[in-house]
Image (cartoon, rainbow, N blue to C red; front, side, top):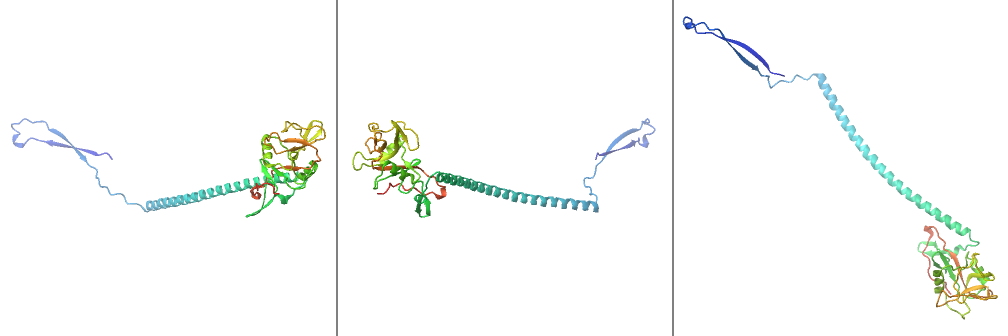
Length: 285
């Protein structure tokens, strides 16, 4: 509030004893400025009952809002924790679903493998372990090399080429089909010389017509690991003979000659929970 200004008029007259000698002077007028200060200590007006009620209502509303905000924060924290737990549970369930899907695919693959075989000796794939009976990728007494299992016969009686093939078919296998240097080197390492230089191990190669050598799968031979090339005449079936040079190991001979033999079958992939470590030992005598 602006300060109020008050003005007053003050008149001064000459002394009475100077009236005869001092000429009459005009009245002198002085103005004095008087400032009225506003009081610094003002007593606030008394609060009415309505105002007091309003204040209480405002304070009550403020307390309610504070309490409500705290409740919302608590609810938000709990909802966040619940959401994190649900995400963790979802991740666990997704991993379990992936595991079951993989297991189902493996079981279907195993079943397809078995159904394609004309015969399947399930007991030959069973192995007792500390965790119970588990399944092996190769039949007992067979040796795994890469994606194939091999059986190297060392028992008596020896068999003809046809008899050897029939033995292999009993395991859902066939006489060995050799299509790489590495495979031939592996086979040469697993065989041993016996009886004489003309005896060896039957493999799945035979002559279907002159100079046409065919595997048991029907595929024609490309190349080969002959000692001196195939013989002419009635020498229609092939032996792999142990040799210092594994790349010169094959000889052709009569299919009716009795020899040892080599069977080959694909590795059987079991579902993970059924698998056992394969026995790497060779066939027993």
